[in-house]
Length: 511
Ligand SMILES: Cc1cc2nc3c(=O)[nH]c(=O)nc-3n(C[C@H](O)[C@H](O)[C@H](O)COP(=O)(O)OP(=O)(O)OC[C@H]3O[C@@H](n4cnc5c(N)ncnc54)[C@H](O)[C@@H]3O)c2cc1C
Image (cartoon, rainbow, N blue to C red; front, side, top):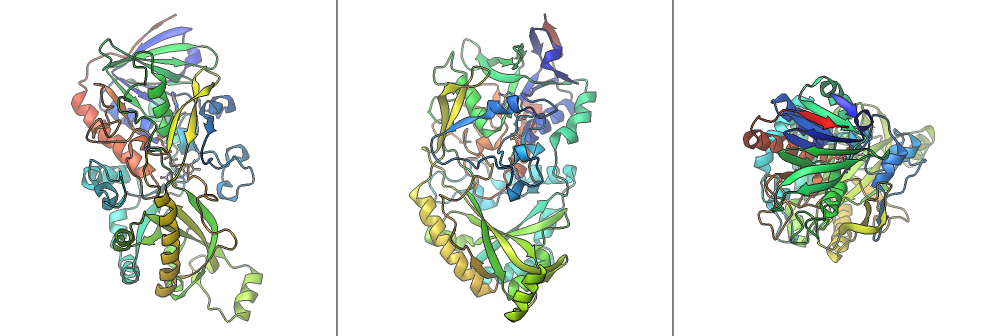
């Protein structure tokens, strides 16, 4: 069932077996999976079914380093959103950020997990194969196209071989027609479910521990209207997104002064995103013209392609992963005249004549400790300390981007993909924006000295507290983190089904 905290008494206590915080893709997937398998689940969500700016304001942060993009009602890249959401990077609403996202699904690559000696702090303590079955089952259940079959389609293999000969690699992603909105995907099931209780309008403000400080016994929640709710469970999973997960651990500092899971001072550190630049263009060369149909962005759903320097080049020059996306810009009558006057050949895909391609250039950020979020000195409307965000970069980020741009420019021309035009505004960390892909703030590691969660996403130093989020990504080189968030949530779901026996009854008490 779905209820609102306002439908409960002034001070209510709920008890379930597993408590999930957050109803985005991670939380909704996990909570429904566990409920389907007979577990008594309580899902606590700060937002409500309708977007509410006063609840959204609980996400406000103070920027100390590079800022995120600003809200911009005229932004061309978020035209599909209502003006007040253009530029938003996290959403506090039932369904979370899935209410606004664009629905591109992509695997991380095996090399992302393996670690690269030339990128400090890279690699995961689990491997690509640990996630593969969860990627596959999610793709099947959500009805995505088969990315593995796509990778061996003859045209794709042919193009990949041509690029490989020129020191480039490519990978495919699946783009949904209507992006998965979790409130829509899971809403009815949640309403009907007897053993899943979703509470809206309830913000988790503190995790309470037992005397050993190793077990979370309760989650204290509040609403903007002054309601209080205590939720108890045998297991608690934080799925509130990478910023709010770290914030809740840090804010739960009554019993542990540095917060929960923060014995090594790593909560909130290693924050990375994917800085992106999207104002360049590409004049198509012969190879692009030949494979223009593979580069179409519409109609959706469809598979699309992105490009990068090959692994050997990245290793040779100690580079990060920087990825290029090409979006067709279709010819207008004046473009046609311009092309004919310059004797340029036509580039045609299944939708029409392509005048040029919009270039989106996205960079990996080297994971490093000083890029971080921490509790600040200002307070939100619930009296919680706001986050301070110090998003900053290393010399490796800058050097790697400059070298990569030089090599990509050269190799795109050599293989016949085309020539770039960045005008007066070439990509630099100064003019790039965030990609709304917050990662790394509670990184996964095999040892407590190196991370915040273990390989099962359990917070070090606790027995029953888990995190389902890109917060746990130690590195996220490839663009589009959400498929991996989903695969990790599924993996965690399996782990909890094995370790959390069916026992407790859903129980409500209060005034
Ligand atoms: C415009 C846009 C486009 C995007 N496009 C893509 C894309 O194409 N591909 C891709 O891979 N990624 C994309 N992303 C990123 C993607 O949306 C996120 O990675 C993903 O939605 C994160 O899911 P989540 O469940 O971890 O977090 P969220 O969806 O942010 O969910 C967190 C939930 O927790 C709730 N919450 C927060 N704090 C509390 C609290 N204290 N107590 C209770 N509840 C709380 C929030 O209200 C929210 O519902 C995009 C993002 C944006 C903004």
